[in-house]
Image (cartoon, rainbow, N blue to C red):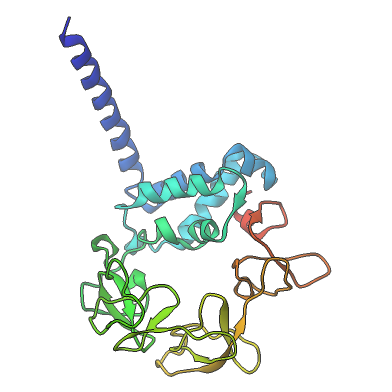
Amino acid sequence: MRWFPALAALVMLTSCFHKDDGLGSKISTVRGFCDEWGARACNDKVVDLCSAATADDCIGSQQSFCETLIPEDKYSAKTAPDCLDAVADAYKDGVLTADERDTVMNLGNACSKIVSGPGTAGKTCSEDSDCDRDEDLACIKKTSATGKCQVPTSPPVSGGFSCDAAEAVCVTDFYCDGTNCLAAKSQGDDCSSTLPCDAASHCLDSGGKVIAVGESADGGAVAGTCAARKAVGGDCTSDDDCVSRICTQVAGSSGVCSAQISLSPSDQVCKNLR
């Protein structure tokens, strides 16, 4: 009977392979992936908090939303299982952090490689999805709105050190001026589309509009001033106003900076969950 434990282990291993093969087959297409995405997102708590009529309605709505995020010709299934696990984890408690919101609404974090372009190493790009994400390539920009597809340095380059290598990226709150990693600008400093502010502030033009890094199509340096982001409890009109990156709209006022998103029928996240 010594062979019995080994046989049992073999049966279990074979069963696991069959399960994996089944999921792998389903998520080989955008439609299959998005159907599974909907099933992972629409747990009982989400269905209840978002006031979905049924779980099937929630799944169908979320599947349709998912499909709008992924161009058919750029879908990559390589990291799909990790992305689906992240979606399930984000929605499991009915509360989203800013990172979790970015994952489920904008294909961020664990889902950032689902959309993969044709760009090989060294090719010109404007965003990560222009590059071959299956090869871990990202769009690395230095001093303009365009960059090159490269595998980013890991770990990132520390402040004061050279970043002239094509693949070099700087640590948080530092930016590459084309030669070295310099400290990002802070409250009151001049900033531009190529001269970023630190995480505690954002770059605003004279009219109070946010200037995003790399915003100008021609790579020109749209100018502004770094303004402090609001702490939790501060008034806001957009997520970018808040250190937490979450601005919750409140009836009768512009909004308030919040630490998290609590799902409810009035929240925009629930729009595609019912």
